[in-house]
Structure formats: structure tokens, C-alpha cells
Image (cartoon, rainbow, N blue to C red):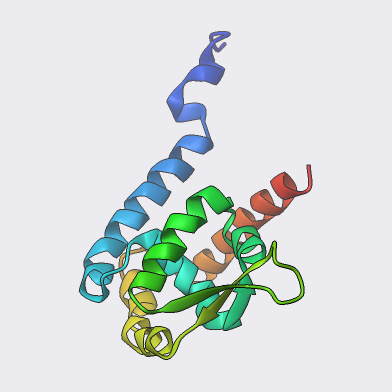
Length: 146
């Protein structure tokens, strides 16, 4: 019979392996991102911008589960590097639009090898990866709709 405090053991927490895995995976990205001079947060931001070409900061934040306070310095840095352009919406001045630049599109070519390199760092079969992906998004979706 377990102790009434077993619920507080780190070995009984789902959150801990999720946290530790996330931290380790982000760390594994570093040697692949350093040559293209991006942080992990800049990289995931660029991934959305590469896909969308143009997006509001609000929509970008929603996709990345990041608030504007976190995104603003990332976007400023990406703009300084010449990968994106920030501009106010002509329809609504409150909306900041992020647009991919030509240099940002060129960066996409350099980054295109990173997913395959990262795939070699994670010891899951394609089926296991797909299952984990679905489970993680199930968790994210359930928390988003609370």
C-alpha cells in the first residue's frame, strides 16, 4: 500500500518526463541551429512564418502557444537579421503583421536539413513518433479548450 504522499514523487509525474524531454530536445537542436544563427524559439517562429508567409502576431502566438511579450523580442531580432518585416495592418492599426522576406525564404533552404538530423536524435519508430505527436496535441488541445 502506497504512502499518501506517493502522488508527490517525481517518478509518478507525467509533467516531469515531458519537461525533461522538451529541455533535452531543445538542447539537441542547438548544434543544428548555431550555423544558421537561430535560437530554438526563433526557429519555431520561422517555421510558422515559412508556412504562412504573412501572419499577425496574435495568430503566430496562438500557433506557438507564446504570448506577445515573449514573441516581440524574437520578432525584433528576426527583423534585425532581415528574415521578417513587421508592419501595422492597414485595416486595423492594432494588428501587427509579420511578413517573410526574401532572406527569410533563403534561410528556409538552409534549415531544411534540420528535421532529418533531429529525427536521428530521437529513438522512436515513425509509428511511435506519430502516436506521441497525437497524444501531445491531444493534451494541448484539451488545455486550450478549458
